[in-house]
Length: 32
Image (cartoon, rainbow, N blue to C red):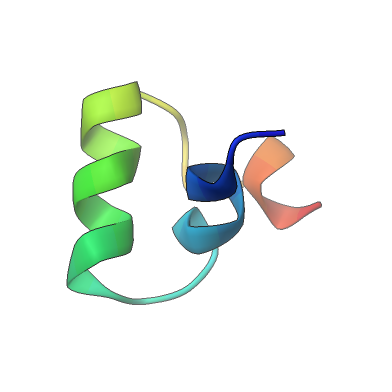
C-alpha cells in the first residue's frame, strides 16, 4: 500500500496534502 495511506491517519500538513492529492479518505483504508 502507498505510504500516503499510512500518513493520512496522522494529523500532519504533509498527510493532508497527500490525502487531497490522492483523493483518498483519511479514514477507512488509511487506518490499516
